[in-house]
Amino acid sequence: LYLRFTGQVDDRPGLKLTNPNLLDLYVDARPNERVRGYVRGRLTYNPIASSFLPGLVEPPDETNVLLDQLWLKFDIDHTLFITAGKQPIRWGVSRLWNPVDAVNSSRRDPLAFFDERSGVPMVKLHLPIESIAWNIVALGLISGAGDTEDLGAALRIEGVLSTVEFGLSTIAASRPTTDPNSIASMAAQTPEILGYHKEYQVGFDLSAGIWELDVTAEAALTFVKDEASTQRELISAGDYSGLFQATIGASYMDKYNANDYFMVGAEYFYNR
Image (cartoon, rainbow, N blue to C red; front, top):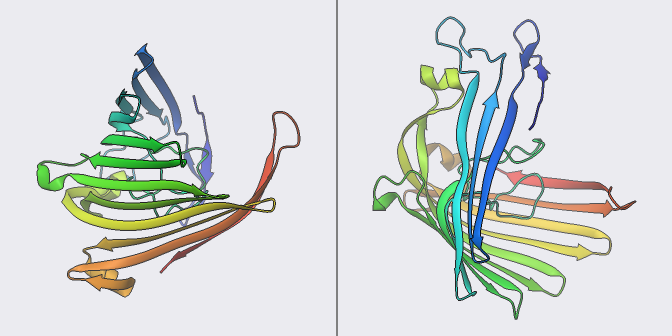
C-alpha cells in the first residue's frame, strides 16, 4: 500500500494537487519446488483527479485497475529455466538512467520511490553457466504482436571477470506509433496508439569495484526509423538512424548499523 499526496505550481494560477494512491495484491502459488505461478494486480485511486482540458473532455477515472504481473516459471532438467507471461524486467546497472533497458517500452522515472512500470509479456529462457558465473538470457517478446511480424526478440549475456561484472545485449522490439497531438491523448496525457514499428538496439554495461567505490557504465546504440531523429543520429543504416546514449557513475555505500545504510553517488548521462 502506497499513499501519497503532492502539490505542483505551474504557469496556471494556484496549486495543482494530486493524490495518486496505489495498492498491489498478489497470489504466489508453488505446487512443487520446480513450478511457480505468480499473479499481481494493481489498483490506483486518485480522489482529486482532474481533466487535462477542463470543459472539453471528461475527467479521468478516479479508480483504475491493471494486471501488473502474470507468469509461470518452470525448468528443464534443472538447467534451462523458463518463465512465460507478463513479468518485470530491467537491464542495466545504473541507478538513475538505463540506456540498455530497452525491453521496457517506457523509461523508469529516476525520481520515483520504486519502479512503477508493469511487466512485459514475454517468454524468457535463462541458462546459467555456474562454472564460470555467466548467464545467457533469451526473450521472445509478444507485446503488441498482432501477427508474427510484430514479434520481438532479445538476447543478453552476463559475465564476471575478476571484480568486473559486464553485460552484452541486443534487442529487436515492436514499439507503439503514437499521435501525441490528438485531443484524447492530450486529455489523458498518454499519446494515442496508431500502430507498431520496429526498433533495434545493441548495448553494453559494466559494474566494477574500485577501492570503496562502485563504478557503473552503460552505452547503447538504438536504431529507429524516424525523420526527426536525423539531427541526433550517430550513424545511419538505410532508413534507420542510430542514436547513441551512455551513462557513467560512481557511488559509495556505508552500512553504519545492522539495519541501516547511507549511499552517496553521482551519474552523468549523455543523450544527444
